[in-house]
Image 1 (tube, one colour):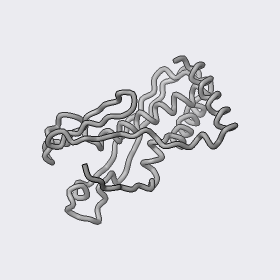
Image 2: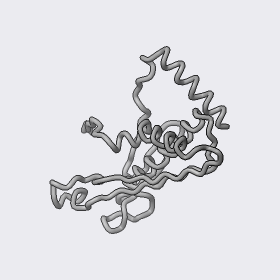
Image 3: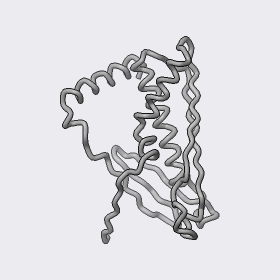
Image 4: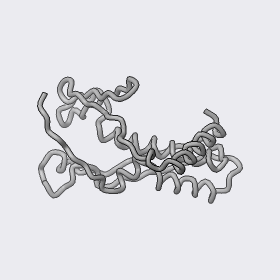
Length: 171
């Protein structure tokens, strides 16, 4: 889709949801994870979406697929890149290349239950954004990136505490 078409689609969505605010809130599509063998998991979603995860050999996995933690970083990186492209389209900018690198710091004592005072998830997250753009002022590109950072759903979920619950059922 061209930047113009992306901008037009976003303008239409903003107009519609501004006029129908009750339709803006919804339940996201589910991800269904099934443990297959060892620590390998297959996750399915809507429209045939499918991915596999596995843990590294150092904790009993086979290392046959990315870990769930890596997928979190991948989701964060791809979401930031997507939101930068969306905002650039709205602002009439056409970046040549958008690159987002996300890493995080973790302490395995949390996931392994060695020390309950150590969080099981990342202790911090860091993103590096690089945008190659011809003709746009650097402050304009920076403003697009800052806007994307604030509005990126995955970045937001990583940044703030999201209420979470787990219900136990039987198969």
